Each structure stands twice: as C-alpha cells, then as structure tokens.
Length: 183
Image (cartoon, rainbow, N blue to C red; front, top):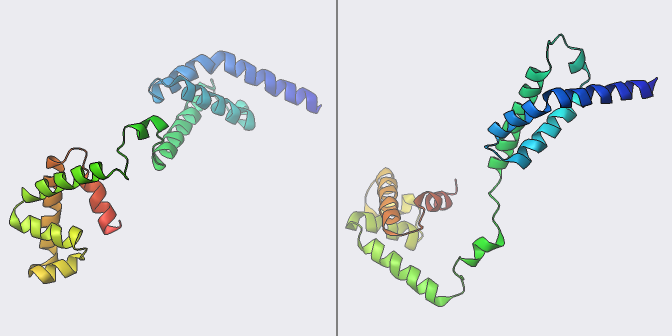
C-alpha cells in the first residue's frame, strides 16, 4: 500500500512538472533576471516543496499553477534576501588589479593624493578632519579643542569627507564614516 502511495505521488509530481514546469521556469527566469541556473534551482526547490506537501494536491484548486508560482516567488525572494545579507563574492582576478599594500611606492602616492586633497579643503573642514582622523580624537574631544559644538564637528566632518570623495578617485566617504563611528 505504501508503494502505491509513493508511485501515485511520483506520478502526480511528474504530471505537475510536465503541465506547469515550463511556465514555472519562465516565471522564475523573470524573477532572477534571466539567470537560468538560479531559476532552475528555484524550480526544483518549488517542486520539492510540492512533493513535501501532498495536501497541496488535495486543495480545492482548479490548477496548481498559482500555488507553484506563489511558492516559487517566495523562494526567489528568500534567496535574494539571503544573497544580499552576505558580502559579495569576488574572484582571485579582482585582487590582481589591487595595489600591493606592502609596496612603499603605492603608499607614498596615496599619501600625496590625500595631502593634496586635504589642502583643497576650507580651513574649518581641514581642522576637523585633522583632529578626528589624523590625531585620532573623538567628536567630543575635537569639539572641545576647536571650541565648537559636537554637531558642528560632525557636520564639518561629513561635508569634508564628501569633498575629499570628489577629489580622490575610488574613495568612499560612507565606508570611512561607518568605520570611524563603528556603526
């Protein structure tokens, strides 16, 4: 009796695949922006869910397609959220173009670029950056030393970093600000 039930489930699943598989794959291709491998994985996972939930076959649907599309869509959303939650993967070739951190020439060139960009800032902005980033003072300490409110220190730091970002290629002020504040 158990063998018959398994055979029936396999037949029902094969029929489901035959009737709705191509449409499901097309739907998932759209959700994955044409990534066929990812769409095929999601289609397999969707059919696995159908196999794991035989009660879905007994539901009063005229067609299983809406159920399959809903499950596939939710799986695609979960997969995308999962990918976005972890850092992007890079290959070894990305490191080939990066400068060697132990190369003193690269460090010297970077230091010269930063110094030139800092000289272009207004004296007020430069003073804040020097206190916070070069002297290592906290916002409160820099504010006390400069005799200005902490909010002004934060504001000047923000606008100074934006100005540096425009003057230094490949510089990301948002990344530096996050690293500095620890948030």
